[in-house]
Image 1 (spheres, rainbow, N blue to C red):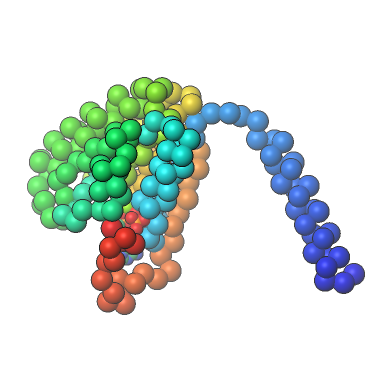
Image 2: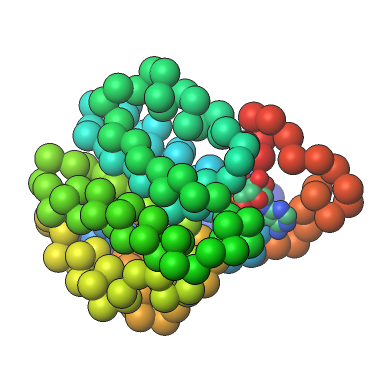
Length: 199
Ligand code: ATP
Ligand code: MG
């Protein structure tokens, strides 16, 4: 068999596999996606899904649980151009900057109070909970309550959670779990965080 024939045979086999998988996937409902791991690309992937959803006119909610002092491009863009996105930030900054556990817990609870109605409202097609995992890791939020709210959300609603860690119980209830692996990062080579790329 020459190279071209070999390729054609391989592609035919692959197509049969893909078609069979598509045939098998017959459940239609929203999905719960967890983007975790130490590499770069979790939040930016979540905002990629926000853009996809907006392309179809879907209703989107975005809640960010940790906010740096630095504004981000996605925040600026959403606030200026996406009045249809309900955007909320915890607004306390990184825990290693606030160094205030009681204040952080209050802020986390106040932020969770914004999330709860979103996770109960079928009008939202997509809800992004950026950096939520840290609230579970630090036990700022009650894990059982958070998991129950994620699990009991409307059938058609998709939810995206980002952040390192998060725990086995969270992974268990999510439909899709992706780990972004840190192979290398520009920052460790001394390159400054870049506008439009990192924030
Ligand atoms: P991004 O928002 O770029 O998708 P992320 O959500 O995966 O990144 P976070 O842990 O939330 O990662 O960190 C946000 C910021 O930290 C970004 O500016 C990102 O470039 C940077 N960052 C992410 N991973 C690393 C890493 N392994 N080393 C250094 N900086 C990182
Ligand atoms: Mg992030």
